[in-house]
Length: 321
Image: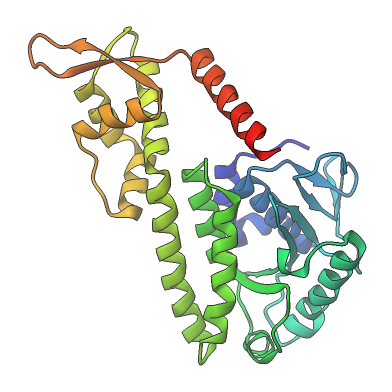
């Protein structure tokens, strides 16, 4: 199976009805797979299916369905549709297009049992497992069942696909985002549910929480994102040293940079470039221009950046032993 880019998956989620119309008799299968791919790309973990799962890979996303030469088969009953083996926690995922009154009884209720089986069979702490329920639109009966169900050790996280789009969008922009950030959000969603008075109230509360979470994540990752985009700009200009103004002008025209800055509600200034390149060790000051006295920067060779990164990893690993 060809691994799709995060932005291709994001585009399909945004135009879900249009994408699924290509498969009039197999939409539920393609929906399951797409949700699995979204978690794989969002978590930056390899994607496996029931056909090629590799248990020697500790951290991965596994869709229980089958993909044999492009012919998809639905995940079997009695187990989660998708399991994400994250860094220090797990996510069992149930994905359904059902939007009627049988959404809870016909689909999501069994996800709770699947989670209990997963906890028992893998001897994991229930508090480290999240049950994520993904659907284009939550039904009122599902909301009421979740709202009034007794608390459990494993948190249940209802997600409409619009929210999944925002989460994946955040992960793509903040490509060095930690798995811990997912856990922070997944801990807050049940609180929004418990404190809500109706399904519309839950949607409104969750939207505010999601917006706040997205801004916090992207603000924390801003330096790395801008640093990489500045490095990319320098690489495209065929000179050893590039002026700060050239870098800034290119960044301000970049659609993803514009999207990023709009979400976090911040602006980018010339002085940011010098500070970010130095702090991220992606560029070195190489003097100043004669005409405008603005800084010139040279890219740090990728092999040098990688070597220092590997030394940092070894240093952290030695502490963590």
